[in-house]
Length: 222
Image (tube, rainbow, N blue to C red):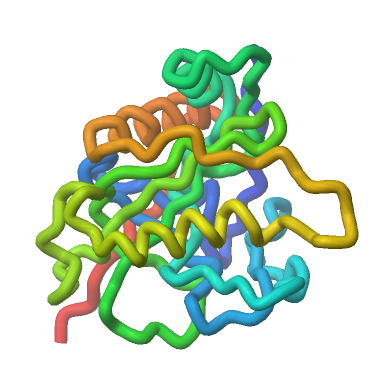
């Protein structure tokens, strides 16, 4: 299969194509944050320009209880879909054609998105939207004072996990319209999260190739 040539810009790294997922991925990943818990509108990366755009106002009261975004240089395609089909028994599953979604837990109040963070995956939701695999990786902010030491989804507060489930099962539902077929088929552990991330990275490389110079986020000392 011929690789696609991703959009890149010399003046700023494209958040999806121009940033490395991290040298230690999938154990520790770089995540691009699109939304924070206080957002009352849904922000989403414009894939062509790499600019964060307003996708739509939140239709109802649901707000994501964590930082929410995606892992750069990942793509939910054949390998992610195959894993979903293997684990669930669902037929005709395909990838949703987006970078891999990630929720990042932190005790800190972060007022706005469009930023990069280092996160440690601890598990995830295997979500199926129609016939598309739409996994949600759950991670903790690296070195976070409250969540940073956690390694498994079983260690997370039950109420927070239930809020995340409720958000993802309802945020696309509009009462006046036909109900969407969305389900969380499985909540998986850290090792499976690593597997899904690795597959999404391979899906990306198969479709887009390996960028010649993906920028690695650096921390400023001081």
